[in-house]
Length: 65
Image (cartoon, rainbow, N blue to C red):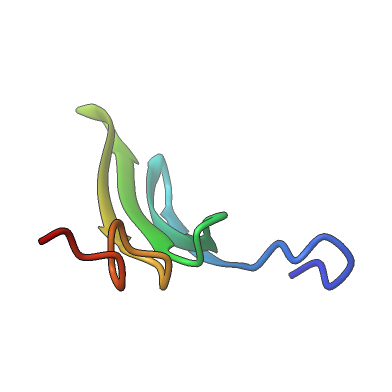
């Protein structure tokens, strides 16, 4: 975490020989979170990304009639 820039992230990684599993999360500019899990092994590198929206939703409080 960088309190000067506001950069917030978490990460962890486990290695077993040539196999690596890990994950990381980071706070995006809109306040949402991006969470990535990944595996690197003899099948290559594979990642799954999940995003949680931030507080600045689109159109909230600005309804059209």
